[in-house]
Length: 184
Image (tube, rainbow, N blue to C red; front, side, top):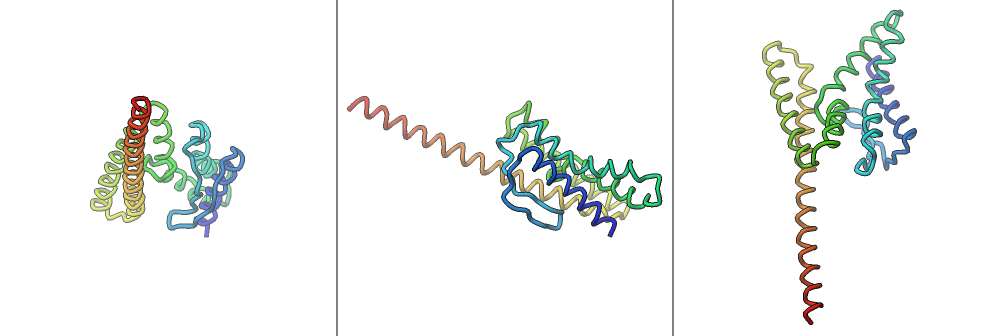
């Protein structure tokens, strides 16, 4: 029950910051990985994205700091664990989204997608190794999250490539029509 309350606090913090930062979202989905807000973050500033992604782990860290020396230390430790897990730099976790946003400031989006795929692959292999060596199956959830991130980044990369190629073809065709108008 404590884990569910910590997860709810984490997601409510994201929701609160989305509203506070005036980030529009169309719906809320509940999945195996928590709540997901369908929001178009393409036109949101980098600063707002980082605040949005960090709000959940920050809430868990604040809860931990506030109640760690009370009778609710078990709940505090769950919040600390949840904050640490969410700050692992794999997409779709908050830590991965923060890293992705920071990279997008300096690098083209296709390069960022490649780095995210490589980073997620590295962590998936690392977590599988930890599972194998220590027989700690808690990391299996992180493997699943890392694989989910790889699939999402590949889909995103493919969609952007198709759109870019379509726009190039469309621009070529419009230029040809323009040349024909000039010649005729």
